[in-house]
Length: 185
Ligand code: 3AM
Image 1 (cartoon, rainbow, N blue to C red):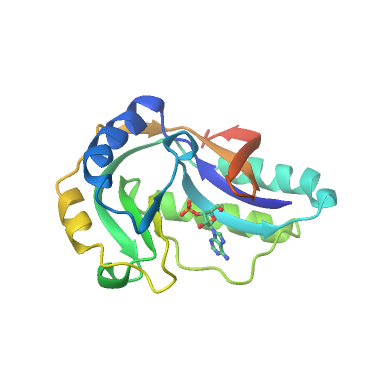
Image 2 (cartoon, rainbow, N blue to C red):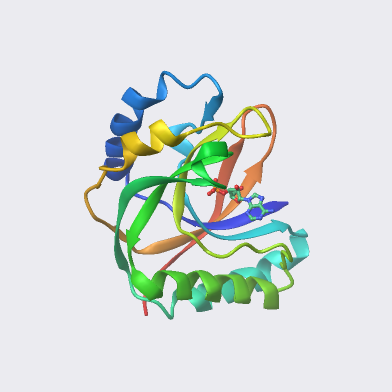
């Protein structure tokens, strides 16, 4: 099964983003927008994981979560992967948490690795909320969109849990929450 670990921002925070993005999104036929009900902040991508790994994985992820405190985060400004002139992914940034957020991400990834859920192709951690992906493989020039999102500053929210998520790929991607752990450090 295809797994990742994520934060689930509260509905109020996501509603704010939906409102900001809704007005900007209409003029971008080259972008596929992610359905707001599936929005999340990926902390660690684990890739394909065998079912036998799940019990150990749960123990390791729980241990990592127990070492970090809840963090106040907020959505702020837009960005892209790679450069905005040929964007394949358009996202909203996550502010706050400072080094604690990236240390939590590293601990979750290390715990997963120790449990046997290793994903070799690991990119540097850059917390974000993916809003849209380009239809052309070459990407789109998303500079006007990023400009439109540059002033966005959402209401702060408390990240107090991490969730183990399963992706069900298909014409419509669906995410299933397999387990959740509170940040209690
Ligand atoms: O949270 P977002 O949507 O940015 O892009 C995928 C998604 O991130 C990412 O994992 C999240 C859940 O699918 N993802 C998919 N393949 C990946 C890979 N090979 C990946 N992240 C890193 N490496």
